[in-house]
Structures are given as structure tokens and as C-alpha cells.
Length: 307
View 1: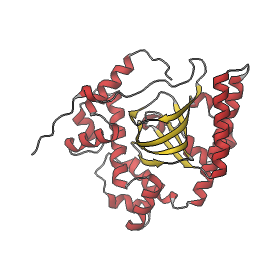
View 2: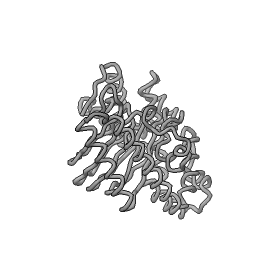
View 3: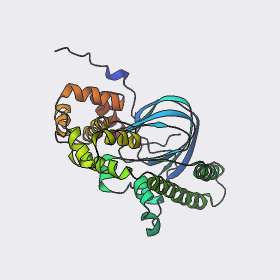
């Protein structure tokens, strides 16, 4: 058996677990990135709402890979590590917020299907595994959302009297606009429900020795049709998604437990430690050992807000 050379931990990119771009006493902020660059796997203690304004990139998380284009909206929260590759003139707006403080508590808003799919950050599963929501806006929806984001950004920069109240109101309007846009998208794409059944099956059985055939059966559609639907909705093939769900769970255990890397690999469904090592490095941009070392270092270091 060929032995692979172990990458040097010193060369691994750092994992960002900063608390976000907001002030210590007001956990809502807006950041404009007119020239966003490639970025390795990272996470934040806050949640993020990202609006893609122009350019393209590949956005990767442990839940899948998506090609970003103007009009895409991402919601990322919990211990969901993500990053950007193949960036080409990417321009985005990034809103970072504390979900407990700033998501609308109105029952009518929370009952929206789009709210649950895009902002379901408070569930135990989301808090443990991380959360990722993705919607693609129409031209009219994008115009409205971009206007709200710029107004939010300007309030954050100018900080006129009462700006915090205005920012909260604008953010609530933004959340509702995104939730409504996602609802429209779901109605237009009924197959999403069948893909969702497959995703739920993977999330429930990822630690077991499941097969793609079992995932297809759970979806209730033919194999050929299933693969087309899954790739269309999730941006990747089902085996890629399964692999990276396992990696995401491994990342949580690496950060929160003292179990050995081999034991963690087996616990999340990898039967081959070498395959786990390759899969983890591809998904996270570093070795599992480097990831554990860096997250432990940052957990013990004083948290500071970053721009």
C-alpha cells in the first residue's frame, strides 16, 4: 500500500471563528466586499446572510458545493464551516447577526416555509451540525433585497441617532423578503421535496454504511431522475453530499471531543481512515489534525471583533 506524504500542519490555512463584524453591544453588522478573494474553510460565532452582487465563485460547505452567481443569497450559521474557491470578480454584501436577538419573533413570519428553510438556525440539529440555506432571487427580488442591504450598510456606517432601531427594522424587512423569495422558488421547483427526502435520509443515517441505492429509494424517484434533481438542487452529487455531511460531523467532534481522529472517522461513517483524511482535507482545506489544533487554539484565545 502506498503511503501518502503527510502535509505539514504549518502550511495549513487558519480557521476563522471570529465573532463577526458587529460591535460588542450590538450584534448586527453589514460588510461590503467589492473584491472578495478565495478563502479556506472558516466559521463564525454569529450567523451570516450573504448577497452575491456580481462575479462568480464556488462556495463550499460540508453540506454541498454551489456555483455562486449574482442574485444568490446564502444564510450560514452554527458550526457550519464554509469557504470560497474559483473566485472571479466576486462582489458581495455580508450581514452578520445574532439569530437569538435579531430574527423576527412574529409567528406569521416564522410559519413561512421560506423562513424555515432559510433561517432555521435555532433548531438543535442546526446548532449541532451547522446550518446552510441558499436561494436564487429573480431580478425584481434582487433589486429589492440589494436596496435593503445598502440601506442597512449605510446606517451601520453613518451611525446617526436611532441607527440601531432602523437597522433592526431593515433587517426584519430583509429576512421577510428573502423568506418570500424562497417560497416562490420552492413553488416553482416541486422536485425539491423529493430531494429533501433524500437529504433527510442522509442526515439521519450518515453514520451507517448506507449506499446511494438506499438514498435513491428514500427519495421515491428513479435513479437517473434522482441524480439530475439532486445535482440541480444541491449543486453536487449525492455521494459528495454524504461524504461532506460526515466531514462536518467529524469537524464538530474534533472541536468538542478528545476522541482520536481514527475513532471520530469511524464514528461518522468512514470505514477507511486514509479516505477520511483525503475527504477532510478537500472539504476543509487542511488536515484533521491541523483543524483540531487551530480550533482549540482559537477557543482558548481571547475573542476579538474583526473587520
